[in-house]
Image (cartoon, helix red, strand yellow):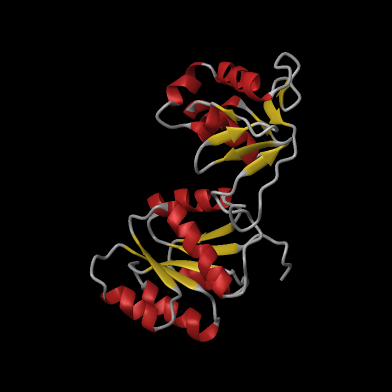
Length: 244
């Protein structure tokens, strides 16, 4: 396997309402995610692919997750994290006894799951080459701490930004040098202040430019793409594997 390739995950869960948004979130975190809605589909996928880790729901129609977990441990030696909605510890204990590496009880915080994935991969000797979700961003001497939501300029001076501006900047930093249209930006930054973006994405971009551009009238970081939206032109760096 190419060590520079993204970490590959197989997400097995029959609930599309959980599986699909979770797969999208994990993809944004830098993982390559394949989905399977049943153990049968997962087995079919595993005939041709070998993921780095399997996220496996216990309760599924047909073959359940514990049966598939036993198969993965005995025949494929794959790291497995169990996803369980049950309050009773029995299934979790059985899963760990047959060789599962960890478990997460639904509902769970996606960031916690990412942390557990990285922990299991480290133990399995396949550390992620992607930055941690909370790792700081750097660009042109600027630094954005996503955990504390703190933006500092190249001189180390704290620059105040609103929640809306933080979301917009992070969307750009997660997709450097890519053209993002207004609809994409709306999807990425929706939250309690989404109405602000609904009224004027362009106004929010202008406000952000005034914070980070040397000359907001002649921007060099957030460029306008005629008929296309915006593109963050600077190189973005993040430390691999966690905060610096």
